[in-house]
Amino acid sequence: MNASFDSKEFRQVLSNLPTGVVIVSGIDLAGQPQGVTIGSFVSISLDPPLVGFFQGLTSKTWPAIAASGSFCANVLAESQGELCWRFAKEADARFEGVQWAPAKSGAPKIAGALAHIDCTIESSSQVGDHLFIVGRVQTLEAGQSAESAMVFFRGAVAGTSPLT
Ligand SMILES: Cc1cc2nc3c(=O)[nH]c(=O)nc-3n(C[C@H](O)[C@H](O)[C@H](O)COP(=O)(O)O)c2cc1C
Image 1 (cartoon, protein in one colour):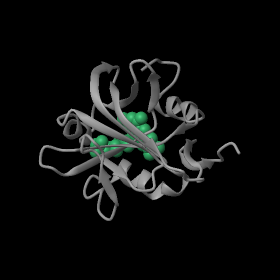
Image 2: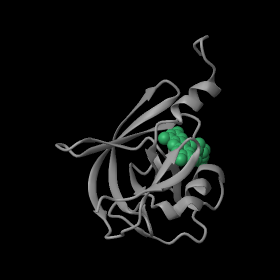
Image 3: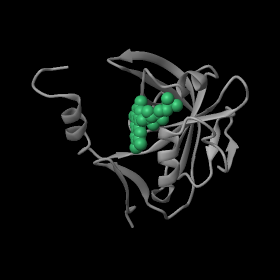
């Protein structure tokens, strides 16, 4: 770590950058749904259609999803704060009581999410203490919900109104 700042200051300053929130989901080799809350998800390329995110090297969940070769990014709505925290903190039974349907890859499409982006894993490369995961989009859909998207800002979740 650079001597001019510590990890607390790094997190505090970077928390001023608002991000959207997705749950990256997948099916593990035992056939069970898995998921993790991710704020670093981004659209990368249109042709070919690529998206990506950064996943911490210490994640227990990601290796189980990665083994399937696919994932689905579920774009959270403002009202899904409970899911946001559940998929970031509790290791067990994250999908208990969660309604979902399989995407084409089999990865869970979580009900109530504003959009579902189903991908095969194109590449995975280490950057610092994270993996940069690139996904090739296979299918995608957005609902007609008028609900606001979730925004993560200074450690809390809020919403943003769509343009009308
Ligand atoms: C709003 C929000 C955004 C997050 N974004 C990321 C991220 O982009 N990358 C990451 O590695 N962890 C991120 N996390 C933390 C992970 O969700 C958390 O470390 C993970 O769920 C731990 O469980 P696991 O070991 O089962 O992966 C985020 C957490 C929250 C609440």
